[in-house]
Image 1 (cartoon, rainbow, N blue to C red):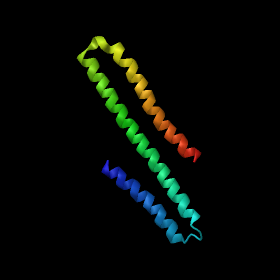
Image 2 (cartoon, rainbow, N blue to C red):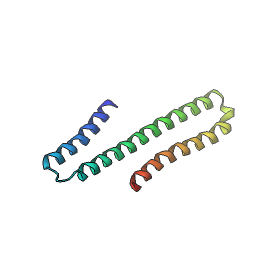
Image 3 (cartoon, rainbow, N blue to C red):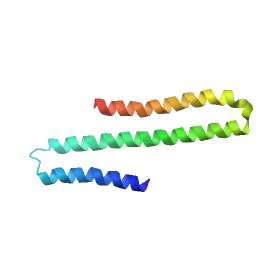
Image 4 (tube, rainbow, N blue to C red):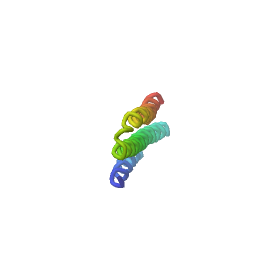
Amino acid sequence: MKKVLLVALALLSSAAFAEEAAGAASGAGNVNLMKAAFYFLAVGLAAFGGTTAQSRAAAAALEGIARNPGATDKIMTPMILSLALMESLVIFTLISVFLI
């Protein structure tokens, strides 16, 4: 995880340094670059948080089913609903980034 964050930080900072070296005439380019960087950071954090929450929810549901196989029907429906809600938050973040 640390390696992924370091690579993302290096990529974002390299674009900022490249634009600064090019000598942008106005500050609008830097503002747009920072917007893009934070939008991609928001999508990355949403995807990471969503997948982490989904994996924990699925693990808890499967553990519950393993302990009590008779409760499969009672566990499966809320799990699917919660997974769908978690995924919708990630999709909402992605759509809001594209709209902004």
